Length: 152
Image (cartoon, rainbow, N blue to C red):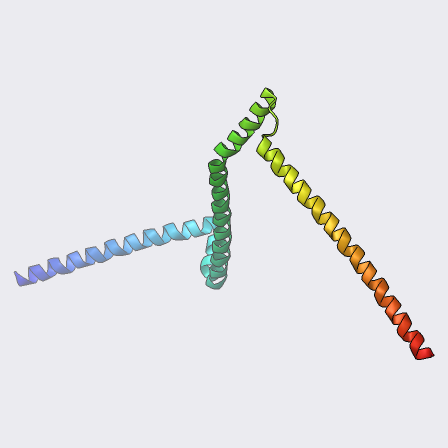
């Protein structure tokens, strides 16, 4: 009985080995056929350094692409958030034009004040320039007098 158990055990282990070998052969044939149909993959499989470099380049390109998509998406959402305010401003301007209303008095006064300030600044700058010229003339006269004294 022990001999019969050993025989069955050997037989099953041989059968298991045959199953594994036939499965391995089938998978190997499947992979070989696939690699023959895809020569680029076959080449990359046999050149691992080139494959790593290619993977790194593709990764960088994809990272750049995803970054560009993210920035575009961000700009889109910002535009979408600003849109109601832009449309409201446009609507107010159109309504103001249609109704014929003018610029409010406080805005006119503010613009006039800014204009007056700019005029004052121009006048002050002109006076400073005139003072500078006068100072240069006086300095030139002093230099001439000093030179005449040295000559005499």
